[in-house]
Length: 617
Image (cartoon, rainbow, N blue to C red):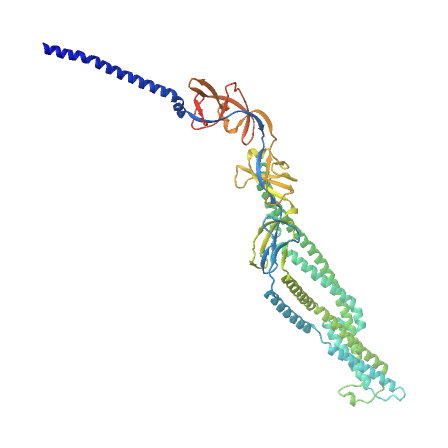
């Protein structure tokens, strides 16, 4: 019994302890739960923000918006001048630098001094050789008239001898001697036979002076007509050959068909608004074909005109030839008659196989002998004049060759003098005003004749610049539009010269500007094209405007106060874009009072009604 009581008492005494332990556990659990809830409450904003989209926002503002756009252009010279070396030399020092403005006559390079060059020695050798050849040619061309002068001298001596004999025989009886008459008739017969030979050979200038004076006008007329006909026929052959080599009538027909095809293609390109460069190339082809066709037609006309002229001159020549031949025939008959008469007179004296020394003496007719001797002298003088005239004509080409050789010598000597003068020069001067674009040599560097040493942009011929723009930007300008210069205050102007498709990017256009004023090649100028800026109340970045099937809209942010802080809710607001430029746009829309901020970017997608957090928080 006692034992049972003791055990029961122990059991009843342990119950309050267990209950107390359970209460402690419950209390501790409640405390932990409350602490967790408190922590969650304090950090709920931070935890929630990490799950929200992070957005960049901006406020709408009153600002200027322009439909213009900016470009940066580089000025280029319209014309350049290449400074080339006149001879092989070596650079001592370069006197200018790239981009420097230079004036005409300003020193560009200093050159090292040099002694006589191999080129000068070679020129001296060429001059010596040319002079030797010229002197040999003069000796070859020079004519020797010794035989003709001797004949004149002998004829003059014979005339003087007869005159002296006549004078000495005036006071004494005339001997019965026919030797003088026989000699005179024999000389006359010989002269007449020689004259016939010259006439038959066509050497009309060797005829008796009286007979030649009658033949000379007809001969001169024939020679002149023949020369004119030969020149006219040569000209016709030249033009005819050119016309044939150009294709002739068939070539004209082919060109006319090709030209018609090119003109049709050009018209189609213009109707289809083809690129300006394509139309320009086709127009150039039309121009070239037109020029070639016109040139060939002109050559044909020249050939036809030359043919008609040659035909007329041929008839003139033939008529002159016929008249000359008739006169020569008449003259030949007269000479033969005179020859027969002289031979008859000689036969009447009784000259046969006997020599003049064996003949009996006859009285002399000194007047006749003097006339015959004078005729012989005149003939000898005439023959010399004819020979000199023939030599003058035949040597005309030689004289031209001599003149050409002399001119070649003069040119070589002038080149040598110029070279010697240049070798003494130690500077290369600028021949133009401009700006140095490139320098191709440096100090100590050798160069050869005709090497390109420096390129200079010529300022006086103006400047241009080129830029690439989008199709939308190209629509806002036209030829003659003046650009606004935004970073250059001096006297300058930039005007649109042409607009064409960009060869490197089919989606863009290439704009060429004319640049005038105080500028230099290589200078960069910032310009602006398009409409002037206007002021708007609601201006936001272009990146904030979105588009869908219903039109343009923006995402606005409405701020909401809560016990746990500000909450930002996204709202979709439809807008109308009234103006825009490269970075900003002006909009109209029902923003109400909720549009505290406008979203420009986000870290991840969201929709209207979503809560977002700002990137700066």
